[in-house]
Image (cartoon, rainbow, N blue to C red; front, side):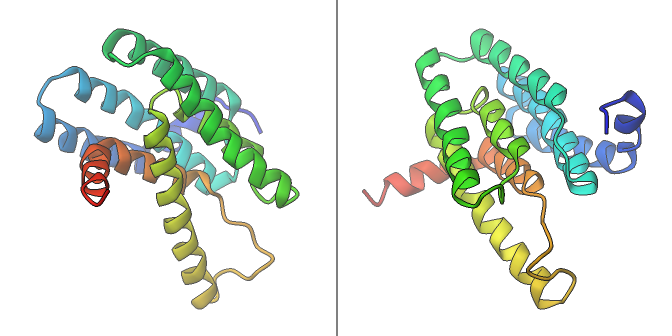
Length: 186
């Protein structure tokens, strides 16, 4: 399977309404700001990855490279935090999934590992851990639901990319508030 413009165009029925909704949410919160621009760009990649992985069970390397390059560019231009924070996010997120891939003997896909590395170019290490936490929760509940309604059995696979993408959108949108709430208990 190859990443082509035709494959991307086939996602338009689901992509365009979701991306417009995401853009309206961002605009309502931040008007025209660097944060909004960063969110709109991130939303393009996350929604495409979620739709393609959800339908075809594959995350394309070219899409991840473009996402990582755009994230690096946005961080260099718009963000005050240093590159070491980004490197820690890249290695922590992808390292955790790489360890799970090794332990499960391939139960976690290589695309998911690379996806977390690309997300590390957009998020701090704390946000990466929060994204993983939410993805595991949401993915686990979805797997239980699919098993409960008998749409999947224990031998079936469930693409993890849509859960990572949805969790990343949630963390981008409300990650600061969630982290502040968590820190209030410390």
